[in-house]
Length: 159
Picture 1 (tube, rainbow, N blue to C red):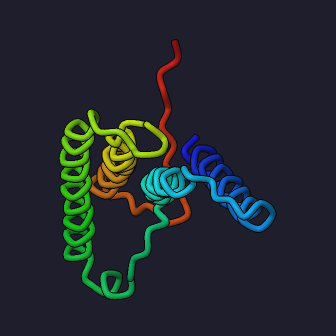
Picture 2 (cartoon, rainbow, N blue to C red; picture 1 turned 180 degrees about the vertical axis):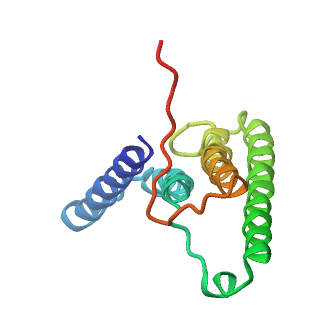
């Protein structure tokens, strides 16, 4: 679902940017809301894309140094690294949510949308990434070594 959301956002961004270029070339006119929409979509796609990468364990890492460590030290480094990421993501969720709340009364100039909706991208994407990193951390603590190409899937309870 995250991948589909990012793909839809990218397609919408591409369509609007293409329409603006075509309008400039053919009509010598500019789509006024193009820039605000582009910033909005790019921000959401960035944070949702980061969560999608966390789900796939696709964020860049240099593993050679850690893999050369003795087993116990490697375990401690793997857990500590993930816990540090958890703290950073939790901070982004908290501060991003506060920022979004503080800016909900402001409106974008051309689109008229609340600015806070744009800023919700940070806590939303970070919260999704946090879920995936917490799951991965639990696996590492349990002694499993997640592979970078394994995707994390969340199972919702059946109703």
